[in-house]
Image (cartoon, rainbow, N blue to C red; front, side, top):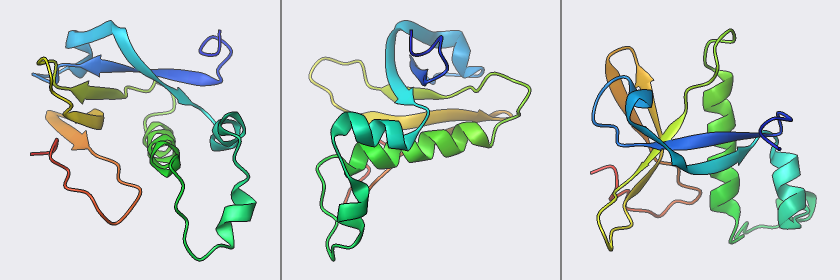
Length: 127
């Protein structure tokens, strides 16, 4: 219902094995991107104005907020007359946790996008 109301967008899993990315998407595997960071913050019970004045901004949810922000920006910069094409990838092997936050197609290239909210991170999924 949230997708139909335009409040959320489904980011589908793709195998990213070729172009177009949507040819190998799995409609049963998706993550939901809320189309407003303020709505996401309310759902998480956050009052960001309190945290913005702190010297250290160490929230457990900052990764999901950063991922939402990047997803919204990627959608915003696509052609306005077309439905946004945003996918994600994760390794489907048992016991694996490799994931790319977003995968996009740019002409004949596949662009992997990994979002990090902090200064640490190895981005092993990119490799």
